[in-house]
Image (cartoon, rainbow, N blue to C red; front, side, top):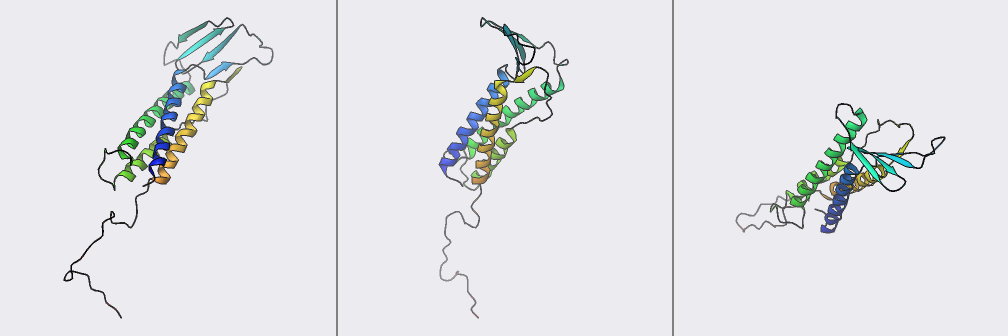
Length: 193
């Protein structure tokens, strides 16, 4: 199994990725209004998130409204909601699995099973990264801060999962660190030619 330090780094990357996924899911800054072309109105700006729309006045006041119905939402927004929630669940579950199989915990006593458990956690963190290339560019909107936070969270999850997958290999060819001792009468015979 890999070193304890690598596992601790993977836990830290996984936790940061999970926090980024949660922030990306909750904060309504996926799309923000753009001030390009003839649309130079700076008195208010609009922000769209997964769960609500917000209008921010130049005075700093913010008014948010939840989406009325799930059925009237565009399919890309519904897909982004589902993928973000699934990514958060995969991250959380993978971190719990990693804590069970890590070398610095005693949840699992079987030393041969720990690398396999950590490998499952690494694959889970890799699957937690979501990317939807089919999201169309809407008119007069720019990418919001949540998109960049989501990208950073995805990179952290990929890094943590990749490190876990690389360093969570069972020791091949070892007998668990115990040597076999034979008495003189039961020692295996060697045939020399």
